Image 1 (cartoon, rainbow, N blue to C red):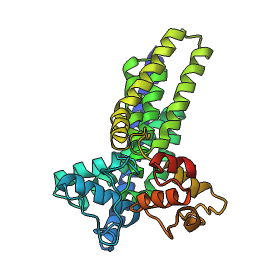
Image 2: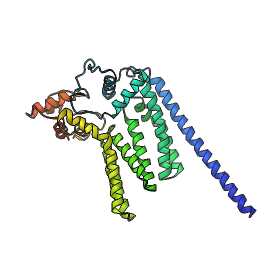
Image 3: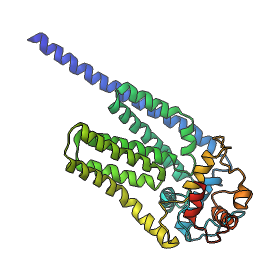
Image 4: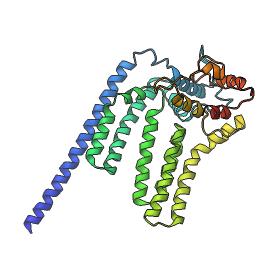
Length: 329
């Protein structure tokens, strides 16, 4: 009897020791990730594009500052992106978040970068949890370690752009959905859908995640012989919760254009950039752009000009943004 008690006591101590080792390993990984980001930030702050962003970050910065100040004056050497007069070209989630940060920090260029570095740290912890719950602690730690030192993460976290938020939202969705599958609690499927809807405002093609979650719920219901009514309710809650953040954007796009554009209209041209016969997977160029739309080059500021040029080439001067997206798609 004493031997059994001693053995149980030993197991508890080993479990406790193992837990401390896991926590220590995760802390070391987080400190490493924070060090990498700190070193990158010290170097990046000296670069000219830190306070003068270019390309997509420039549009995000312009959009966010205009929301805060009310001044929509277009930067020099840029076309009017017509953000207020047209459906959203780019998803509005990140410019809205950036505007909130600017309003709280007196438009500091430091605040979004610092917050995004810490969001990157949060993402590392989330990935550890996901790997641990899907597989084992070792998998979680290895995943977190790779995320901590992968060079692409500090770079994108240091840009006025949304990848770190998209990744954090996506892993959060997976964790909530996994927890719901384990417990079948209704509030968890609602939170999963709501987080999915928020993620769509940052990257609309994450809609595919919602599609596969619905398929999983239906398949899981069949395999575990759950009632169709209970499964239907869960799927309905998931979809309705995802629609809550998206619905106001749909209404807004319809009010300014008369067409139901799903969040943003860049989808078609982005698909063409990545899948045209001359796509190299690196350069965001459109082959034969002049023949297609009558313009020599394009960027996120001059997409309205691209649509107008395309309408002239197709003899449709009233070509809508949705029709232009469908054309490229």
